[in-house]
Amino acid sequence: MNVLVLNAGSSTLKAQLLDPEKGEPLLSMSVERIGEGGVTHESAVAQVLEKAAAHTVDAVGHRVVHGGERFMGASVIDEATEAAIEACVPLAPLHNPANLAGIRAARRALPNVPHVAVFDTAFHARLPRRAKTYAIDTAVAEKHGLRRYGFHGTSHGYVADLAAKHLGRPLAELRIVSLHLGNGASACAIELGHSTETSMGLTPLEGLVMGTRAGDIDPGALLMLLRAGLSVDELDTLLSKKSGLAGLSGAGNDLRDIERRAAEGDDRCRLAITVYTHRVRKYVGAYAAAMGGLDAVVLTAGIGENSVSMRQRILQRFDFMGLAFDEDRNADARVSHAKPVAEISGASSRVRALVVKTNEELSIGRQTAEVIAQQRPATAKVELAIPIAVSARHLHLDAASFAHLFGADAKPTRHRDISQPGQYACEEKVNLIGPRGRIDGVRLLGPLRSKNQVEVSRTDEFKLGVDAPIRDSGQVGGSAPIILEGPKGTLTLSEGLICAKRHVHMAPEDAKSFGVKDGDEIEVAITGGPRDLVFGDVLVRVSDKYKLEMHIDTDEANAAELNAGTAGELVYTGVDMARGELREKRIHRPAG
Image 1 (cartoon, rainbow, N blue to C red):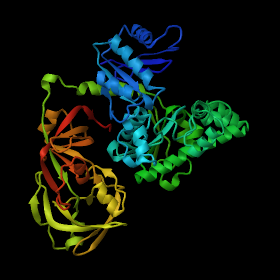
Image 2 (image 1 turned 90 degrees about the vertical axis):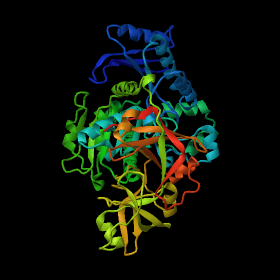
Image 3 (image 1 turned 180 degrees about the vertical axis):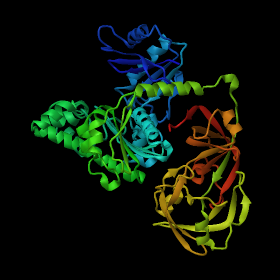
Image 4 (image 1 turned 180 degrees about the horizontal axis):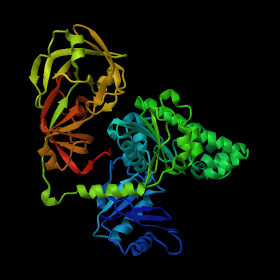
C-alpha cells in the first residue's frame, strides 16, 4: 500500500509518498507560497499528484493539529469528520483551517481513495482529569472550552514505540519521559503506554522554552503588559514569534548560532541556553515524580537528535534517580532512519537515556494504513451486545499476605462464584486504611494470586486520601501504598493499590467477531439504561478462560445511572437493562 502523507499549512504543503511497511519514501516534496500568485491548496495538491504520477496512491493521510475532545485516534475522513475538524478551528486558528483546506483539496482530487486524519492531540486524548484541567472557575472553563490538550503526539508516540523495542520491553510496562526538542518543543510523560502528562496545553504556547515561543510564563506578567498598553495582537506576536531562544538570545532561534555566540562570550546567548536546559530538566524531574518512577528518557527532534552539548546539559546530574549519563556515548551518538536509536546512558544505568530519530510522516502513514485495515465491509458487520458488570472495590492476595491477615492455617472460603469462569468471591474481608480515612469490609477474590492488588474507585481513593494510578490488572509496580487490616494482623503494602482500568473480557471467538485482539483499546457505547454513555479507552482482554463482559467501576456505573442500589461490598453486579456496543471505527491498538 502506498500512502500519500500531506501536511497542509497556510503557506506550505509538505508531501511524502511512502509504503508504511517498508518505511522508505517514494517521493518527498514541498509546495511553497500558497496564497501568493494564484497558488492555492488545490493547485498545490495538483502539483504533488503530478510528481507522484509514476506511483499509485492507495490512501491519503492528513496531519491535523487539533482534534479537540472528539478524536482519540486517527479517523477516516467523511463529511462528519470534516465538520468536527472545522469545529476545532477556535482551538487552533492558525493550523486547523489550513489542514482542512488541504483535506478538502485532496478529497476533490482523489475522491475514490480513502482519506484519514491523524491528529497531533490524539496521543494525549487520554490525559487524566488532574492533568488536563486548569485550576480556574469550572463554569468559565466549560463555557470557553479551556483545558489542556497537548501536541506533538504523533512524534511522542512514535519515538516511545522505538524506545520500547530498543529496550526489549512492552511499552505497556514502561515509564518514559519523551522530549521533543525542535523549534517547537514539548515534554510528555508516557506511563504504561499512555500520555499522562504533557507540557503543552490548550495551545502550543505552554511548557518548555522553544525557538520563538516563551513556554511557561506567569499570567500576571501578561496582564501587566496589557495594562501597560500592549495590544492583544502585539502580545500574541511577542509570545509566539519574539520569545523563547530568539527573545532571550537576541541572535535568532537557530541553536547553532546561539551556541557559537555563547562560546564567544555572549551573555544573552549563555543565558538562553541555561534557561532552556533548566526548564527541560525541571520537567524531567516533575514527570518522574508524577509517574512514580522512570525507566527511560528519550530525546528527539532537531535539538534532541543533533545537539551533543544540549543533551549533556539536560541529562547531567541525574545520578540521584538512577540515570548515569555517558559522555563518550553521547559524543558518538548518531541517529538515522536506518539506525533510529542511540543509547547515551552508561552500561550500569538503571534509567536509560536514548536519542531517537522521529519520523512523523511514517507514523502518519502507518496509522492511516492501520485505520483502513480495520474497516470492515458493511456486509460483514456484526452487531453484538456486550453485557455490563459493575465491579466494586475488592482485592487479590498472595498466599503469604493471606496467611498474615487471616492466619497460617486459614484457606480462602468460597462465598459465591462470579461471572468470569474459575473466579469467586470469598467470605474473607479486610479493612483498607489510608492517610485520610478507612473503608471496612472489602471482599477478597479467589483464587490466591502471585501479586497483591487492591482495586478501588476514584471515590474510594479520595476517601482514603491516596493517589492511586489507573492501571491494567496485574500492573502494580510503582502503584500506591495501602494498609490492610485483617482479623489476625495488619499488613502494610508499599504498592498494590490501583484504580482498575475499565476493560472488556472476551473469549477468542468474541474477539474474532468484533475484529479486535488482546491489548486493543476501544470505545464502547452503553445504551438501554437510564442514560446512554460512551466510555473510551476500554482495554480488550482475550482469553479462552473468559466470557464476554465489560467491567466498569461504581463511579463509572453511577455516571451511567446503572447501579443506584448496588452495595459497596458487592464485587460484580450484572446490569440487565444496559448493553455495550463496540464502536469499530474507534479501535486503537497501542504500540509496543
